[in-house]
Length: 548
Ligand code: F6P
Image (tube, rainbow, N blue to C red; front, top):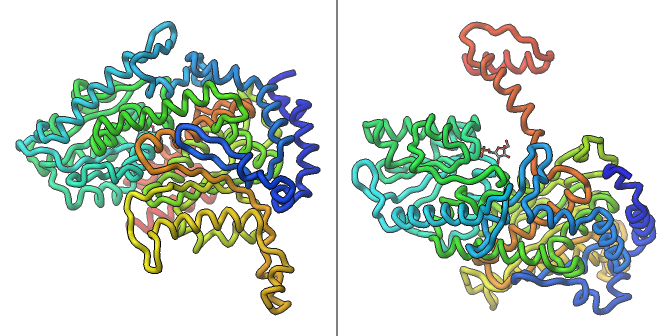
């Protein structure tokens, strides 16, 4: 049987049958039948408490999901990734972001070469550089220390650093300014530097390929801005460093490769926040905290690699996500961190999950006949409650939710009426999961004296699934574990769906077409257009609007 025949597997068909039966059962019944369900359907590792009891699964569904994982040789896939096999088949690359956080004592071979010493050599150089910037020893062109760091990159060369900076702001140097520029929209760059003194500003140009249009365009804008302000091309040497795998391109741009921090083709862009791409994070929080973050990643790697599936957090998360996607037909996952510092976490996860598993063909190139990667989105709580939660509670679509919260806040603020504002925040997190799962019946609504005409409007069907992840406190270690949890859950799903979770060919066509379009937009004479009628008209209309 070819790997494409996922839906013909007996395990898949058994899941489908079981789902047909289980769909008739409400979470209210599942909890009533098993008073200990909320204590039983939980797992815990690396400081993360993972409660999946409010997912619409029972023991049999979980057993069948694990059987499906066995049938797809998930264990073999995990081992192959950790062994450095070229599991990114369409790009013929190994996938070894785990090596980025491996302790010095480990040995991880890629084509017979141990990459762990290479990783630590770069980490050591990053730490030495970060220290000189942080302690003021790194001086700019006019002899001033750096007070501002502007990281320029996009996609995986931006989302991780921004998310980690925001998440770990409490651990960051408050006397320094950190900005992130990604969009080719000039406004992004202009707003990022408008109040900065070039003499005190360090640019980190992050690009794996160092050919990405947005990043190179912004890097050139930054260089022009810096040279104009400091009056001299030679200023570039003190104000620009690069993070890349492409030394020749870095040199071509004009950054001395001695000021380049490298990584490797076995690190995917969206898996690179703990490589040198995290240089801005390291400058912000310091090498020790950065090391703690790597330790958090590594702890989850070890847990993933060695824990039986029943208790394995990424496996559980991946399998439950697959159940929701393929059997309950949910098209989406809402990620709802009840922690303001995680405000960019949903955006980060969008690339991680959707660029990884947004694929419609199997590794062998056959069109899949099952859904793959769901749409990830979200906002920090409680803001979302006052906007889109209405649809999650009473809309016609099933939106599985991941709630994320912490026992302790980094910013205690006494609340009027008692307790801390953090208690109010977490009360909301807990209440939302409860409301989604159990809802409110028409009888309960009537018993409150609600007029009959309003009863349907005020009834909550419930039975809406969620997972709740709780940890003690948002620390660098916890953040690393949390990110690795999602990384590996994406892997679990990709392995079962038989897709390449590590390529991203889908972004290429738009990039290619944009090259032609740019030439047409900036042509000094009316260009001859050969697109479809809509595209032709849009190009003409833009030129008219622009030129007045
Ligand atoms: O366009 C998609 C992508 O290739 C991402 O996968 C990647 O993270 C991003 O562009 C940036 O690429 P680079 O780091 O090479 O500039």
